[in-house]
Structures are given as structure tokens and as C-alpha cells.
Image (cartoon, rainbow, N blue to C red; front, side, top):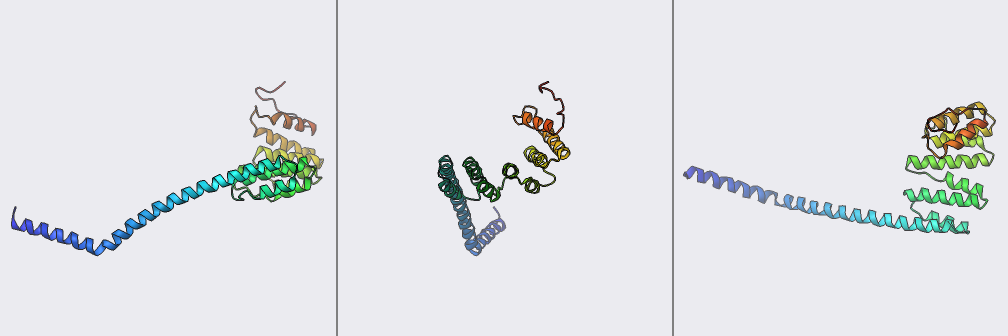
Length: 213
């Protein structure tokens, strides 16, 4: 090996050592940061799991409470379910049903009005049930305002038809029921009921494959 080559290798080695000495703190800091990120991620996962477990336990307690006769106790149990979880929406729906069964319709309306579900599908369920409670309470106009002019879910459109029917606006009710049926599967359990509602307001359900003659 030539002397020049040895000097070049020695020079390169010295440069590497010099770079390492100059950047040692940065390297160690980067390694430490990497370990910190890994530890933080693991802690966050454990915390998330613990939070989910806690929310599940509180939801089960709420389910048990709403199955009993003490609605005040049930309301307290439902309030203990973390508000930012889907469990909170499910618990509120159970509480509202228990309140309706206990002849506390206004309380059930208040319970559902307070729900702000993060899941759009769950929010449709809440709004549809609330709309029907408002209609039963003699407030179909409030139900229409709640649902809005352009609902897209079949359940919400059906509730809109119920509100129009309660206001004796048969034409609007027919349109809503027809639109609801168009969004329902032929085998949907609710379909036959909506067809009957359409008939009651002067409509005629369209024949579909598999429908009863």
C-alpha cells in the first residue's frame, strides 16, 4: 500500500473521529429522544387501553342502572360515562328509553337534546328518536326543525314524514316516505311499516322484487 494511501486513510479516520467528537452530544440527544418517543408511545397506548376499559366499565354500570326502576340513579350512572366516547351516546339512548318507559317523556327529550355524538351515524339515530318523541309530545314543527330540510339517512327521512303526517301535510309526508323507502333495502325490517305509513297518507308503495303482492 502506498504511503499516500495510508495518509489518506489516516486523514479520513481523523476526520471521522473529529466529526463524532463534535456531534457526540447531538447523537446522544437523538438516541435519547428516540427512546423517549418509544416510551411515550407505549405509555399513550397503555393509557388509551385503560381509558377504554374504564369507559366500558362505566357503560356497563349505566346499562345495569337503566334496567332498574331508579331513574335518578340511572341518570347519575349515565353521566359518569366519558362524554367523548361512543359509550356516552349509547348510554344516553338507553336512559331516554327508560325515561319514556317511566312516563318521563320530557326528561327523555332533554336527555337526547344534550347528546352530541361524534359518530354521524349515531347522531342520526339520536335525532330520529328525538324527533319521534317531539312528535309524540305534539311538537312536529320542532321535529322538522331538528331534522332539517335535506336529511339523507332513511330513518331521518321517515321521521320527517311522520312530522308532516302529524301536521296533516299528506303530500309532503308521501314524498318523505317515498324517499325513505328508496333508501331502504328491500329486506329491511322497517320497510313494511314505512309502506303502511305511506298508504295512510294516500300513497301507493312501488312494487319491488320480493315484496308482498
